Image 1 (cartoon, rainbow, N blue to C red):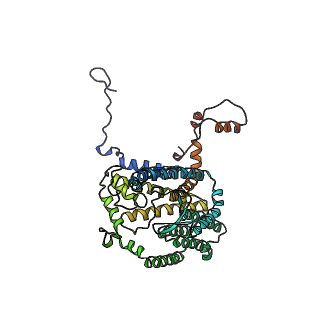
Image 2: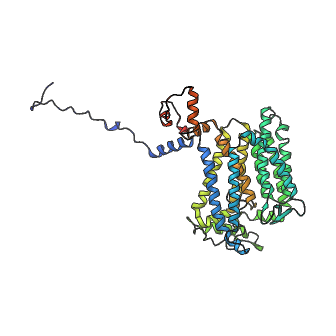
Image 3: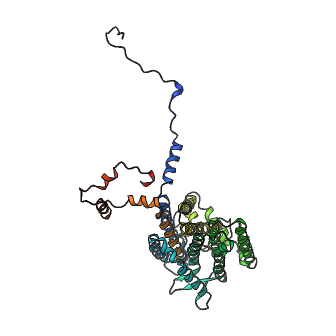
Length: 454
């Protein structure tokens, strides 16, 4: 090799890289998308979305109930925290029910279907007995249980239809009877119409709409043919039109869709002031407790129209946060229903998701002036213990179903405590008393794990 004048070997220079051969830069948007998709596909995603989303909605609802109900309580000569304390008590009881439901096996849920249905029918019939049933805002759908507490049995009718309908369709699917239209409809549709009739005797059109949505959700999940589905929908729509046409109050509510003026006789007062509350909130709202519409201008500010007070005090950011939480809850329910192999879990999860999603859409649509005011509360958010208790039990159902997925069970098993029974079981399975190994050492073994089990 030739040497330089200094006697040192020449420096070897790296060949120049062509200008067009640079490696492509990683797109940050694509990297974020891949990471989000990877996290979204993990087996515990639905579990955390249901648990976290429902708890966040409930806590935010408690805050807004306290803020929206203070003026109403003072106008009734009650303490300012009166409605909040009742809602907080209902949330505590509902939390216990949610925990119990999330720990119950699927077989026990199916065993409770018929007792819950029988109890709901009995209580809904008891509402119509003079001296027992109580009328609230023109709807006789309440039972006084002593003191200031009242019970609305129709709210438990939703849970009863979901559990009983899911169990019925699952048993018929196991026997391969769903290919016949009579087994598809009977006795599901007659029992649902019986519940609807008991509800409509009290004049509660909003709860009847939610029950109808649950019925159609179950039929759709069961694979009802299009003509059969359309036939049941036509019958339900015809009955609904007749009930609306024969009621001046319902016709007035229908006429208030999109109203910007209270109109003659202030028939659209509630709908218009709900829009006023949302419009005055701006981007971030006027602040908690600073609502103007709750000072007697907006009726039912802490129940059916609590979303309007949320928009006024928390602004567009607050309302979009509530919508995002309900969207996440709905997605998680659909994911649980779509990934399970158990027919009962599929129908029950789909029924609960239809119930909560449809009720949220009807309530928010009425506040926005896009739908008629149906008088249904915002799930987990509005004031009302009778609505909160069965809804939180239904959320417990979804949590139990999300935990029961095989991949979710494996992922949860990896998160068990490092000490105690799990380590003892591992040592016992080895058959000999060898030296103890820490869980961290076992996790470092070269066993392949999917990213979803982390």
